[in-house]
Length: 398
Image (tube, rainbow, N blue to C red):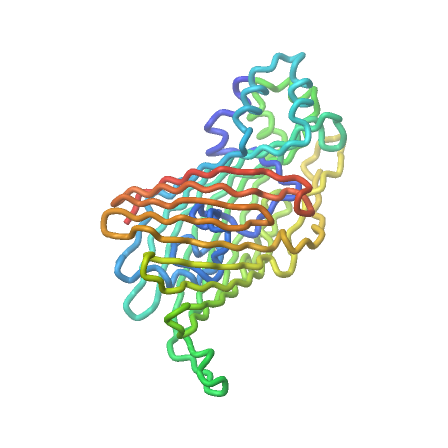
């Protein structure tokens, strides 16, 4: 089964298990995921466009035009390579034993690249333009072949163009509260066009065995569906005039438009709330604490397979996910250790869907390196199906 998981598959056509996956955001920056995925009220990166476009206003003016000509990230489940190797090396008669060995586990590998150019002008307007190319590989094997087969995968490769702008308005006052709520408000908007190819399948043992040498071509020929859509986002960020704690609150409404594809990969409209503080301390370049409550309206859906013996592409339907508070909660902290013209280091930690996250972000002149870990919850409730993932990011920019 040597051709089951070629690297080109990860980059161009994808196999995704996402029976209960979270898709409120199109891209997960390893810097933000190390911080618990909470960025609605933080911002400061070009990738803020994926959580709250108003956060672009926190890109430093001193950076001039901020460019990330390479924003590559690769993530994988802790045992993904072991599963892939065992499946690839199995003889025909051994495939079912390998499936049984890993039955019920979730396996993920993701490759994505976000190239962007951003600018924070002197008149407190920020602009950003970006191009995203992404793909995921996710599997779940089933020991007892049922409606989902012995190897279930939901698939997509997608990419798109993003445009965004944010404008800060100064001097919002609250005299009736003795100035306690004085601050500046930023409004951000973004627009995006997304195109994707998706492949949903519950492969039975015969399919896996018969097509072990051309599994990619078989999935493409049998299950491919093309989709595209346009959507926009709107966000707000309110920064209080408190120099000691620098508190802020954020609100974003993401994916307003036509990204509700019939096939896998639909991006639901997502309403997100966030709050953050950045206390001034003498021994650190920067310290941030944040908390988000994402997908306030619980728009996330599960992909439920309705078995069709004729193998048409309409085998899956969307179903609502039960409301679980921890699935919506994100908390994070970021500590900047070094930040000068030549080198920057930031440590990140947090809580994402009830599980810990951790990460480190480093930059040496034009080279950026990020490492992070987080745990995705693939079930309708926390703890039902967990997938610990590890992320490495490589960037070139200034």
